Image (cartoon, rainbow over all chains, first blue to last red; front, side):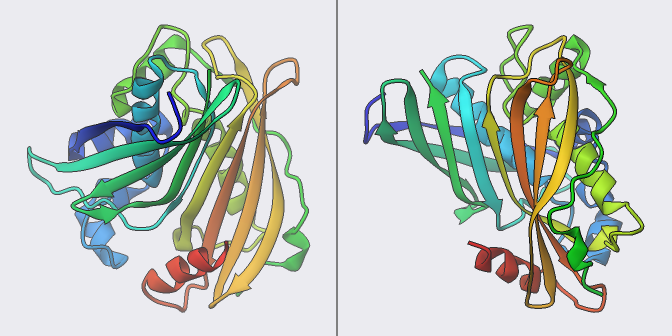
Length: 131
Length: 149
């Protein structure tokens, strides 16, 4: 990878079933991630994905770009807009794009862009990969 | 009610040991669609351990946090090495920063994740935005998170 490289865009479909699986796997069983009743009662438009689930999708893209898991040395983001996941079989699509902004002897610095319906759902998502 | 100023700089006891099993990592990787090589956990897997440390903070009656009014504002990981199957991990949380912006408490936490020998594995930094129960909507908290740059 070289500075300025645009990494291949990754598209991930997110359904309610994914959120239920992630709730179990992560231990974060907050009902705003599976119950419309609770989500709307706290002012959300509906069930939303865990911020950490969306961040995990960023990690998934990084593994794909790096060619293997275990290469990420730093990963960070702010959670800005929620990913609203409808109760249907189609779900929503989250897009993860990335660009190489710096390369050193043993690291590659990546700036990501994580969007859902053209809205940036993570702010300043950045990562450092070891090489 | 804002949280107590004395929270700043406080370090909580380590979480109970968490055994990283093949089944747990496989399940987490499957839930996020991540690659799994039979050994290496996905990059965000340590949140499972850090989340327990954060829960310890948020449910401590002396801290005064209202659990349903906490928003995860920011997350960052730095890794000494990847988490692998067979690790026995603990997380030790310290409150690094505490600010009050727009009616919200902005709590900067750092959870040091270590293996069974006490060697560092990774550090999970989480910014938690705690809104006083009287305020409504999420905009205030999000604006407050944006202001925390």
